[in-house]
Amino acid sequence: MIRFFRYSILITLVSLAACQEVLEPKPVTLLVDELVLNEPNDVQPVRIGLYSAFRGMASPNIIAGDFTADYIQANGTFTDNIELGTKRITATNGAVDALWATIYNTVYVANFIMERLPLLTTVPEATRKQVLAEAHFLRGWANFIGVYTFGDIPKVTSTNQVANTTIARTAKADMLASVLADYQAALADLPAVTSASTNAITNASFMNKVNCQAALARYYLYQKNWVQAEALATVVINSGVYTLEANYSDLVSKDFTHEAILEVGYNLTDDPGTTAYSLNNLLVGRREVIPSNQLIVLLTSAEAGTRNTTITFNAQQQRGNDNGWTVRKYGTASEDNNNIVLIRLAEMYLIRAEARAQQGKLTGTTGAIADLNVLRTRAKAPAITAAAQADVLLAVERERVYELAFEGQRWYDLVRTGRAQAVMSAFTANWNSRYELWPIPQREIQQNTALTQNPGY
Image 1 (cartoon, rainbow, N blue to C red):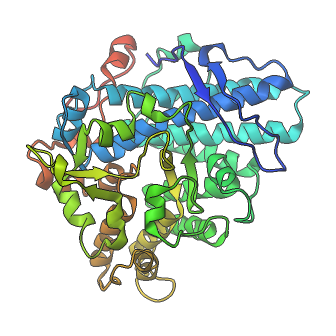
Image 2: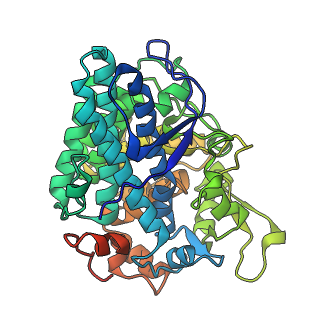
């Protein structure tokens, strides 16, 4: 069954840009199964609920992308993390269940808005268009994560909970077509952002045309549509809305940098450190998982340059199986780096580099190597010397490790490029090709007889 369970979300949102209606920065408690959208005053609370549901996906999504792959090794006592660290993932894993639930919570709230908002004729047309566009974007984002994590998934387009509990899995190609349709619908009506002078928090926290184009660039990369991936990444890079930070270390230690294209923000009230899947708690506090020895070798190499600041070493923690290394990207509520960045500008250079390399565009100012060297220069790392296409593509893969470590992309990268079996079987004898998809949560299989399990689980 696709569950839309009752829960409260405590959230504080910052003000929108001057041209948008202001959201008061006060905590708002919202019951997702008691959404109300009957009058104009209901629009902003429901909109907050949509962003709240979206934020709930962030931590489980990072766990899927990084903990499934070769970035971590188990170092604690929690079964969920041991399964992920030792590559013995089961359908009862709590992180698996959490990601599925938050995906469909986001889809549910988006569907609610799409069903009800068009009926409110007293809502200003500009507001209606923007909020509907945000709903399309975030439903598309949720389904994109769902497809690349679980494979074929149910296509849910209504809030009829009885009907939604008996939906079978929809083919991946059909789901991806619906993702593209949602992104394109969103792009038409999302607000334009033309200058980096706009508040960086607004640029990264709320949907706009440029961060939608960034999501489309990633979409086309995954689809191996190299021409469109290159084109959309170029649009984002050239927009001037987002700029590379001069120092890579700022991306580790600070929230809402000028490079953040899409970022999930938290405050003292709702910091993810209070949740079961707090990245800071798992990686730092309890040290349930730690950076793998293989990743440490890469991040401390000359090629990584200043990107070695992603991790730090403490000899006092080096005991037993603990190698003493810690991830620094996710802080506590009192620190300035407890947010989760979902897209940033460096990824656009990496997307464009990969797309160009796949098209044989390797050298010159519009070649893949030039894009990689933009990031190498920022990181004070040696320039790329690869010449052959295959070598440049491997350089892109390594560069994505150096640049995006612990930003939730590694497992998805290995699977989409067909490299998972080669890399992961060398990493651990426990790797099995079934882990190229996460299992459908066992609870869902038991409660929805229309669902089938992924092979091998």
